[in-house]
Length: 264
Image (cartoon, rainbow, N blue to C red; front, side, top):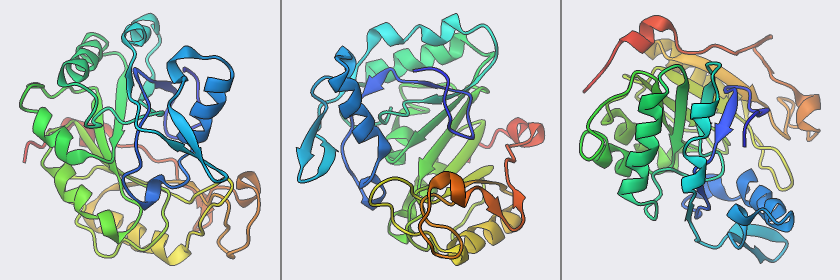
């Protein structure tokens, strides 16, 4: 993996492949179908990671640590924002502590990059960082995914993690999140679901998050409407676009926010 079309990053780096479904936000995960395609293309790393369930492709629970992929960021001399494990979850329970430490060591060696790590398992992230992973790197942003109010506790778990930047990805947003405490969260990404079987997003759910970002001084980034537009009509992702409140929201955490090392 390398260059990407993900709007909030420059490149992807996948030292781990494979995952498991943990909540409703995983149901239509693009990575499952992508892994199936890569397997069909005879890419060894993705061989045997998924199975068919009816008409759907789903993870089968196999997790693969790719030692050969560890040094990829060392070869990128130009500074990049790098999304770590777009095809997995670095803090999955089947990824060994030692391998996570090895990934951390690469990020420590490449301070010219900024790394963005997104997990649905922030409780393990909190356990390891400050424990086996003792240092907080200024170039590593740590985040969690929240798709609706049922998993809102992930934000509280994330707040326990020491990080240069903490962020929440409200994507795919498939339900209201309700009141959410964003104190200590520097960045919020919001987006609807796309692809076959995509579930609708509601503008009032986005409004709720936007208002709370304003309250907590959290930078707001609107990624996409996805398959369903603000008029609740299904179209292509491109046709629905990225306009919210009459503008495109591409804001990133500021230098001032990145300087606020919060260890609470």
